[in-house]
Image (cartoon, rainbow, N blue to C red; front, top):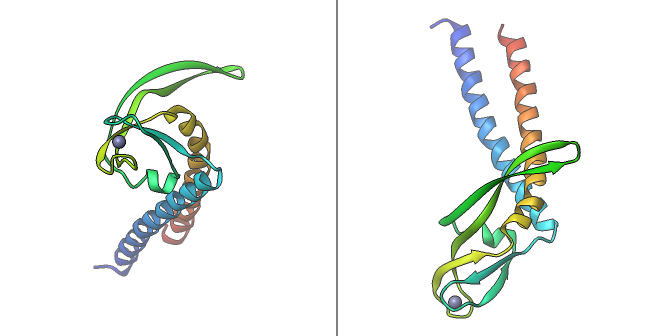
Length: 143
Ligand SMILES: [Zn+2]
């Protein structure tokens, strides 16, 4: 194999690893940002009706969810934006009142989304920008 091809393959593999790292970092920064914003998820156990609050980090631990979303068009400044809004969102958590795993409805899903989305966009935007810069640098080196 020509050395140039090997170099290109190594660079591509390195880029892939870097991409994963950048996105893990972006995800961590998003979580830290949402945590720092003081946002608490309000949940209601569907079995006993108990309401409780969870910090973002604890909230993301539950992976199973069910939801119904409705897309609404909203006026934002001078533009109209289509935004998905949750009609219903529930995740499985251990309810502190009954001590068992139940579906818990997220009562402030849309408000939480409004807090988390700009933070996520900022963190992932920075990761994407870094990738573009790295991509250009690689092209300059390889081509
Ligand atoms: Zn309960």
